[in-house]
Amino acid sequence: MSNKMWGGRFSSGPDAIMEEINASIGFDQRLYKQDIAGSIAHATMLAQTGILTQADRDAIIAGLNEVLAEIEAGTFTFSRSLEDIHMNVESRLRDKIGDAAGRLHTARSRNDQVATDFKLYVRDTIDILITQIETLQLGLVTRAEDEADTIMPGFTHLQSAQPVSLGHHLLAYVEMLGRDAGRFADARKRLNESPLGSAALAGTSYPIDRHMTAEALGFDRPTANSLDAVSDRDFILETLAAAAICAVHLSRFAEELVIWSSAQFGFVRLSDKFSTGSSIMPQKRNPDAAELVRAKIGRILGALTSLIVVMKGLPLAYSKDMQEDKEIAFDALDSLSLSLAAMTGMVGDLTFNRARMHASASAGFSTATDIADWLVREINMPFRDAHHVTGQVVALAEQKGCGLEGLTIEDFKFVDPRIDSRIHKVLTVESSVASRQSYGGTAPANVVVQAARWKTLLTGQPHDPRVLAAKKHGGHGDGGVE
Ligand code: ARG
Image 1 (tube, rainbow, N blue to C red):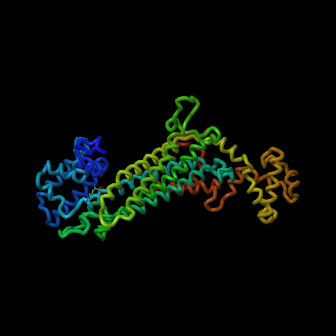
Image 2 (image 1 turned 45 degrees about the vertical axis):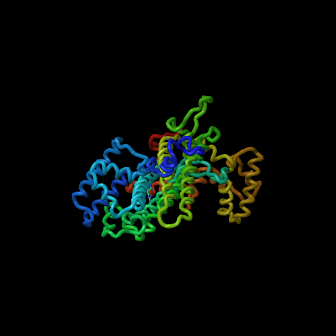
């Protein structure tokens, strides 16, 4: 009989609830490949060290390969009463090979087994994410090469500040993503020690060879402390932290795409493939994909927060609390992967409206700083005074209802008689951007060099900036320019 207070949905007593709260097979079945690889490495080692006969080893490995094939073919029946992937696989192995299956679990525990499986999974996922990040970077670099000379407003406080190269803006994200890939690679390095053979918590009395299983599974070495090995979840916390930071970067770029694709900005047009319509307003092109990428940080950071709270205060060694690590981590890493793919798609075929960006870059007296710099450079004015004089120039332009380039030399002389006609050279957005040649600055000449540097890093092929410069305005991949 189910509990009258809360058992309505259960057909039997507390054991059904126990099963529901306890089982992880609903989500950890995803670890089947890693679980079977770990078991094959373990069985091979047990035979090598004389703990298992060769005949048992052969039966176990053949049986595990059959189980793998069944799972991949979708014919395997996962059972909740068998709790998790480890016991589901082992139980099926027993169906197939009988008692020898029971020898597989010699000198290990589910505690070291799950830590091993999950590390292998996270390691594989990190490798995929790094590749995805690099693909997105390459997409951005390719667009940046073509947009080195495209001028857009640069913003601070989302107010027009100084004109910049669109290529430079795109390469800013390439830098962020480069650090993201580096963080994942760092996490992978620390992760890559094998817990297998730590057993339940204390190690084992069998003469196992942990170096052998570590090597077979591609780990750099076995973990050095069995208590730590079965209770360490740093590897997923670090990976989620890297994922959260990467998701923040994607979120910032997604937000820019949302703003830029609005009618008011009109800087970009997302392709039909990455836009949706409105069921009521026929004119709408909504940037749903960008909005969803912007939002995914919520669940990714949520996973990091959840798991770090789960781990807080847990006594050594393994506690079942740690089973809560997988479901949210899978969701977070899937979300990041999908976001990277969506962003790569959007970047590849969005269209930049160069004319619109240029017009916007010229508005708002965006070359005012260039006037101040000219006053410092050419008539040796202290920067603070130059700032003040330029403010008067801007006020005059505002009064006359023109841009800075619309002012005559008489206008300038009215503000400060020392200004001469050379000032006109620095008033265009082109000259402003071209002059920012300090290392890391926005000058197109710099952008071309940085794009080439990244292309070399990402493809392993040297890219000569002069070749790139010649190719500029050549083609735009899938995307185009209005
Ligand atoms: N399903 C468990 C988990 O994900 C496997 C480890 C179980 N260990 C145990 N002692 N009950 O954490």
